[in-house]
Length: 621
Ligand code: ADP
Ligand code: MG
Image (cartoon, rainbow, N blue to C red; front, side):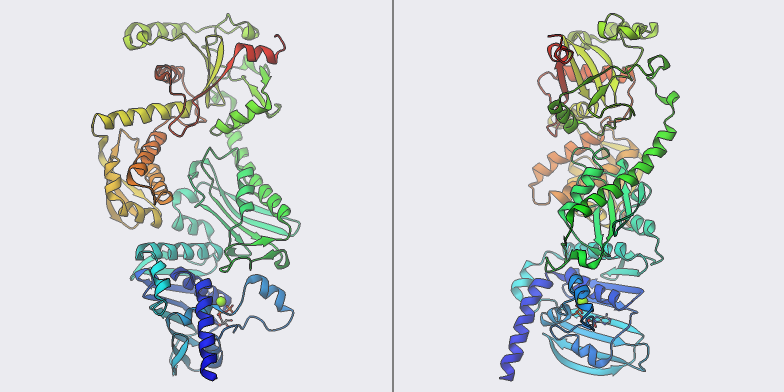
């Protein structure tokens, strides 16, 4: 009878292990959480072979007395429920007292633990959940738990594990999240003897962000501080300089636990919709503090997801918190943006906004296409398109609609146009009758052409041109690579660094010549095309992101994506004022393209409003 009982509990634990301990990182997470619960201020993690053969977590926490240490490995053994009052708090935080039992069932465990008040420590060895050795031992205060050969007795589970580098990367990510959730605890992660991560535990979250992401990220953040209706939100949101093509840089903690929930993303998207561009996401790190009875973490076996009793108020609070954080930055920016600086503004146009209502459907369309347009004019309805920034030099006097402005054509400009047409034979050949009216929102070029008004998205247009040029070069098997006179050192996050090293050949095919420079740095000797130096780091990061997001795609399609990315990075950005020269060059080149009216990502290059449409708005037809 007794024997059957033991077997029962072992099998139960192995089944539980399948739920709780998915992979080495799950064990690491459980151990660290236990150390945190035991009030540790220093936690060190060592792994070998992606954690498959070796995981060791050492803390300076409370430690356990021998009896408790042995009980800790029993199923449903937890020291975290003492009174009945604890129960709701405990239940919601997911203390189920099964982590140690589950991990022990599928591995070999060595535990050394000592409480402050005890003279000596206690040493315990378990195999498949069974104690095989217990003894007194000299030890410092705290607990060291070592796991060797995880899943050694569950070969099916073992087969599911990814290669060492991948498992190690997942562990690093797990530790990163824990560092960010506990800035007052010092963490150290050693991988195969080499230090991968270190946090000082001095509460300096910006330092942690710089270590984990990059210095660049840390210097492009706004602080979030929000409290209302029993919900407290603190953290950081990133500005438009550090947008990413995925949500990897969006991290949420609820009461210090890293969790996911769709409404977090939805709320941030809503609050950041004027900041983000199509397919790009801002950096977000938020710790949401709510009462324990308002949240349930037990909806997911590893507590990775949460449920809220009042989702609406969480959504609203995150929206509010993020918007407020952005507002601060907006003020800083607008304070700097003095009127004189606006290249194309002329005082005589002040307060003479010419605007028309765009039907809602069209407005949505424009909204969908726009890169990052912020309607700055204060007195305007949000769906009003303003032409206040129409530039003086290239307004022609004969347009009835603009008559009120009576602008003069600058002589030097007229000369220039003639010069260009005289010397540019190519241009004459493709001479298309159009007129550049100006640039709006520093993003769209307004063109009048054959009784139509066109808005050209400067970024999408340039991207299309660059992409075609790259592909053309490749077709003619011209080398895309250009050697840098002085090599460039790119500083990456550990994850990006590893990705770059794993894909050296891929980068070579894309025109880069890069090599390992140690310490998360990559030395760049050559770049595709004639890439600007200040963009090299960004392009490397974006390519690593892409490689990571589309891991499973065939190499050819990844290469195509890389070309898009390279073309995109080389292109004129939205929110950039252009000179008349730049606009003319762009518009000319785009009109030569003829049939292609989309950027490589499939977004349109321009939207056209014909005269009939415009006149209809004025009820003239
Ligand atoms: P839970 O954390 O849900 O209570 P675990 O199986 O993770 O369950 O741990 C069982 C018990 O072992 C804990 O309640 C705690 O008392 C003890 N324990 C585990 N790890 C440590 C540690 N690093 N320091 C002190 N006590 C620990
Ligand atoms: Mg635990």
